[in-house]
Length: 60
Image (cartoon, rainbow, N blue to C red; front, side, top):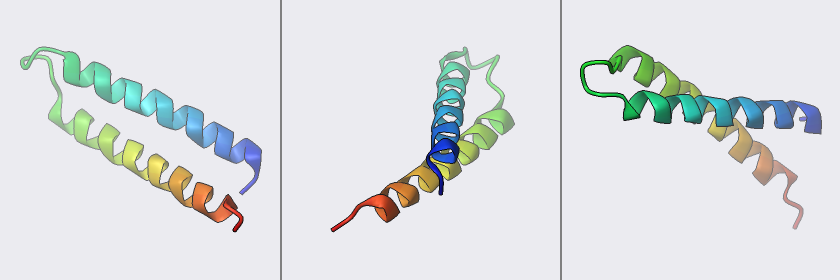
């Protein structure tokens, strides 16, 4: 993948994980379980993409 795409995925990943953190900090009455699961799934997928990309770019 190109560096520009990886940079965009990294920024999106950071924003998603910040949103997860902000949702988890809310009181139990305000938490939206469906939103938390969706955000964690998207964050995990973006992190997986970044991890795979990192390992593909490692030169031995």
